[in-house]
Each structure stands twice: as structure tokens, then as C-alpha cells.
Image 1 (cartoon, rainbow, N blue to C red):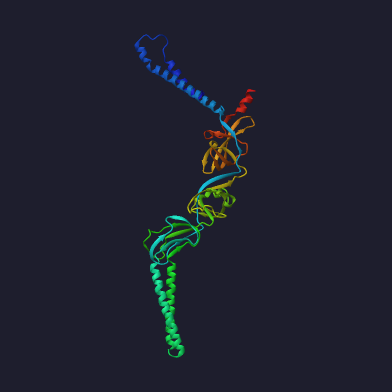
Image 2: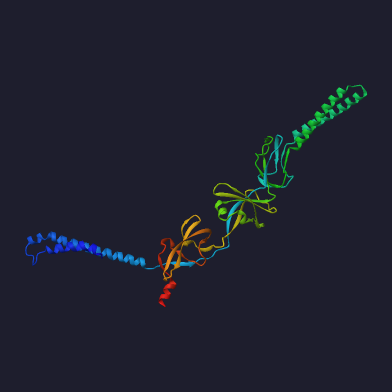
Length: 389
């Protein structure tokens, strides 16, 4: 106990003892006169006991700080050369077009109830042709009559029995009826919607037996002649691994397709956090894929050469990809102390993480590192065994 703390207590005790009378106490008056002196003695003894207890506790804490702490350690091993991330993408069409009638009429037939695969030239829907056929017959009759009238007028003009002006008027009438005939034939041919190319078609029309207006979309046809897949992935994955072209991509198609290699075609930033990657693959799938169909896409990222694999429990103070690890350092005097090392997290593999920033074969604290301080002494099993020998 420090003398600076004991001195006031000893002085108080000495003064109180000097005031006590020599000999035996015989009267209650003498006892009453000593109450103040007795209180002073008691207070001095209590102060001395408290100071002694504080000193003992301080020595115990100091001794505990000097004692080594037992920790669990492990060796940082070589990390994997690559890491595969799995995403759910979707099938995207090469192009899409909306199909509609170019003439109005009564819808009498739809060959696409909801959605299906269609080959080029397939008839998707039909209007009632009767009104168009009537118009076409009339146009033909008018044209034939106009053709006969023109021939008579031309013959009369050549023979001098008619004027040249009459022949020209007949020719104009004949050409007009021919134009109307062509339009009638064209309108009849437009009473059907025919698939312009092979693809996946979706019915977006109303129920049959209704009158439809020109240019009102009834179907949407998707060109699926080539495999085109899109995925959305965190933008920081591209930034961490450099350009996306350095990654490997593959897709798992439904049976009997199996996995296929994908070629990256485009990278579009949707916002600051998400990027959209567009891929293509050679050939077409069999059976054909549907637009919007979910597809599993595997993204293989190469790892830096200096990466090591450590337990996830060894990570302390993680902030995104930045973290720290406690590792064991043997000093020249034989002591084992804990040091802190900043690391960068590259990938997670279940209970294992791949990091860079640690030397290979470093002995790290695999559990409880977050509760330890840098420079703290620890006990190592090998050191304990050596001491016993």
C-alpha cells in the first residue's frame, strides 16, 4: 500500500489512541467522555482496511493482465483460384413485334388461344371474309364494264366515229376501277394475320366474334431464333473484379439442353448499385425458350493470386469488403502476441471466406478475435509443451 495513502489514516489513529486514559474504566461518565475518541479509532481502522483491499485488487488485475490467454488458432491456406456465383436471369427475345389487322371487320377465328410457338407463315387469326368478297366481286364487275367501255371508245375514236376526248375519259374510268379492284383484292388478303417469322406468340386480343379496328394489336411475336439471356447483378462485383469480359459465364438450360457457354454482349448500368448483363449463345434451344423464362446463370470470377481461405469466424470489424483479422506473432523473446491485419474479402464459401492481405501459412485467431486487443499475450500449445520438456 503506498505510504501517501496510509499516512493520514495512521495519524488519525495515533491521535485517537493518545486521548484514551490509562487504566480501567470505572464509571459511565468516563465511558461517555470517550465516545468521540472511539469513533475516531473505528474510522481510522476502516480507512486502512479499505486501502489495503484496493491495493490487493489492483495487484490481482495487473497479474491477470500479464497471464497469457488461451485462443483457438488455425493456418491460412491457399484460397481457390476461382469463385462461382449463381444468379437467376431471364430469357430475352432478339426482337418483338406487335401484329394487328390492317382492315376492320368481324373477328371469326383465332388460332392462338393464349401463347404458343409459331412458325413463319402460320395463320394466327382471320376476319370474316364475306364483306370483302362482296366488295371484290363488285370491283371486278365495275372494272370489266369500264374495260369494255374503254375499248369501244378507243375503236370509235380510231374510226372517226368518236372523239379522242371520249376515249381518254373512258381510259380514266377504266384506271379508276382498276385501282378499286386492286384495293379490294388487297383488303381481302389482309383479313388474315400471318406470322412473319418463327417465334413465340402471345395473344393480347379480346374474345372472338367482335369487330376489330385497324392497327389494334392482337398478338405479340417474339423472335427466339438466338438464345439471349439477361441478368441483373451488383455493380460492385464488376468493379472488384475489373472488366466483366474477364469473367466466365454459363447457363443451365432445361432438359435436354444442359449447360451452355454464354458470350457477354452488353453491360448496362441500371443505377449506382445494379448493372444488367446481356448474353448470347450460338444456335437455338430445343425446345425453344419462352421470353421471360427464368434461367440459372453461373458467373465464374477469378481470384487474385495472393488470396487465402480462412474461417468466417476469424473476421473482425467487417465493413463491406473491408475487414480485419487477428493473427499470432512469435516475438524474439519467445512470447506469443496478437497482431491485427487489414484484409479484403473476395468471396464467401459457406463458413469459409477468401481474403487477400494475409501471408500464406499465417497463424490466425479463428474464434474470439473480436474480443482481443492488439499486442495481447497469448498461450500457444506448442510453447506450453516445450516448457514442460
